[in-house]
Image (cartoon, rainbow, N blue to C red; front, side, top):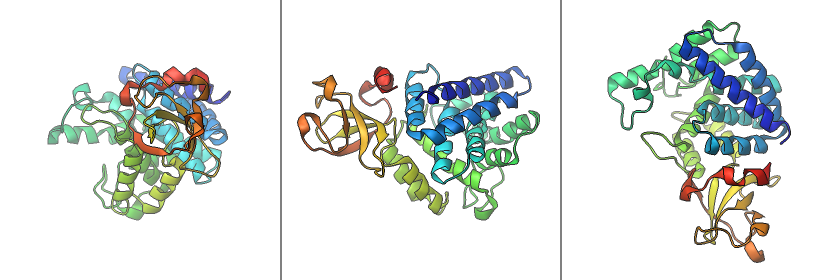
Length: 311
């Protein structure tokens, strides 16, 4: 955790600065972003679960969390699981940070619209990709893999994506990975027009859409990388207690390490001293299992209340 928190904070600061630069009409400074992404990639390579936990707490704690950092975390972790080197993890983190940079110039009423967008609004929203590419083209020398990943993160295998309606093999690896990670982040986050899905349901949805929208092999790898209960998510135990996933047992995706946050009645747990468990353990030594995943913020619970105990 020593390197993870500073690396995360540095990428948040660099990303927030980039958004400010775009909104102020000044050239985006790419070098600070690249340096922050490189340190971030190194931290993810060394401790992916710790980075996912720090990101989850940040998303709960920040007044206006930057969704680009969640995308960067997800993509870098995905690349690590596929055995990619540090340079590739840096590029993936940059794709996560810069994929939606064009939205910084779109009207707030479009981005925060509470219902289905009108056709004209949706057409405007889709322009964020080409707007973003134009911004990046004036930001200096951007790695080609990053530019292509940004260009293709909304493309879909069946040609239904945008901006170019690319199909199957015409979409590069980084673009196919970014499409999966971006969609997962979107449907597990609270939005003006939809409630967040638990990670389990989101992963099931991605698998259902694989083969038509997403590469099935990559979706399967993404599910394995993320785990059935990703670090930083909430779960309800069969006992009725609610717990936060704070780690994973080596070699297991279904028995994560948990911190119990409530009692069975959703009130305070009876014993703070015995609230760190695996999914196969319960209070007082009884065996339990996870009953279901929960969306972020379920029962009004905040990960930040347990942050100091885990860092």
